[in-house]
Amino acid sequence: MNLSLTILYMIMFFSGIGSLCLNRKHIMMSLLSLELMILSLFCMFSLFLAMELNDMYMLMILLTFSVCEGVMGLSSLINLIRSHGNDQLLSLSLKTC
Image 1: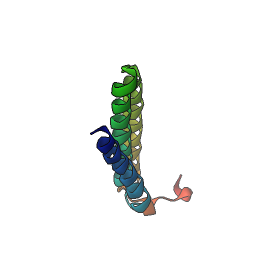
Image 2: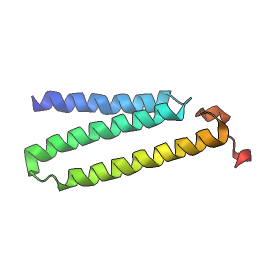
Image 3: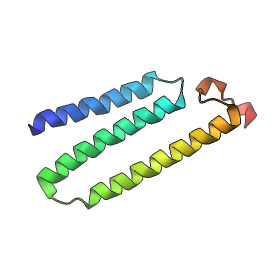
């Protein structure tokens, strides 16, 4: 049972990496694939901590960092949409900065 869950979480993680590499058009899709990767890491880490250490404080630290990552990504997305009007990476240029 635990081996099948570990394999499932690893498939989730690698599908997040694959979608991050393949979706280079919109920033929102990149943020969603990053959140998928964080979610799979959280599930793997919680499974490992529940089985081995019985210490759940590290999960709170991981959740704190993942929330900070999500907030920073969304604030960057909002600033990009306000300045350029869309979230496409092709509309960005270093000349406009």
